[in-house]
Image (cartoon, rainbow, N blue to C red; front, side, top):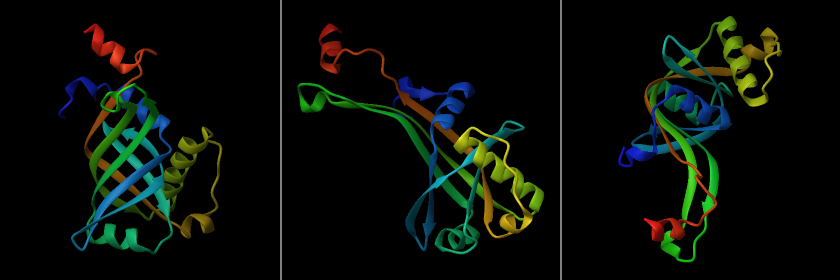
Length: 170
């Protein structure tokens, strides 16, 4: 990471970023060309491994790609706010993000699919009291991405002073 001062390394801070994000972008390679899809997700940590859960239709381009190459990259971001200034080059942007690489595994066992779907619903709604009937669960594809490596990054809002005022004081 070029800007080490923006690197997020504490797990609690990384989970804070993930908790704020509702959409994860999954990047994959399709016949040598990049392809990216935004998806809602859920997640958990098991044995120090970060695992993201997703569901979709059973057929389609992303499913075909992930079945032929299960290596993906994920990205999510939040805390968006424009930093205004008098000079164009002094503008900036506050943000927090997570980017990483992982391995896709499709989940077929019904109990595990229900667990994954509950993690998705819990993350998206804050509720964990959902139940799923077997027929509905069987009708969707559910997959997980086990993160091999990832990095958090954050440019936090520190004060209300414009960026050019900070520069003049330093």
